[in-house]
Length: 107
Image 1: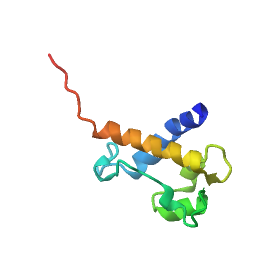
Image 2: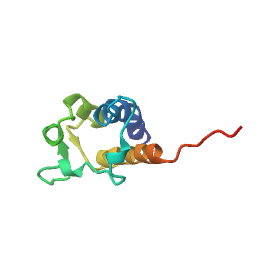
Image 3: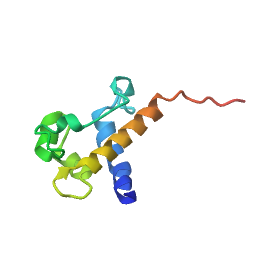
Image 4: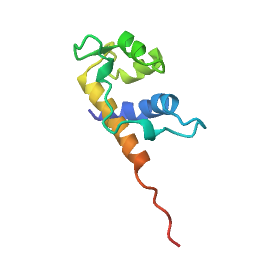
């Protein structure tokens, strides 16, 4: 589980989130339009609990085969429930971090 989490933290954040949800000026994600309860289950067209590469790519124009390969931590050709849960956890953490009030330094 630690390896799976590490893979997502290392690969997911830079390869998906910054590219797919960057602000217009290219400086980080736009969490204003992102739901705090992000889920990728909508990509599972046949509702079998697994998201195939084809379902992933067809589900969003920003999704690519290369990104899918990064997300498919066990390289079985599917994003299974465990992988989907990890993706959703990372997105939730990113959202919470970006939406948290900025701390200012006191002098």
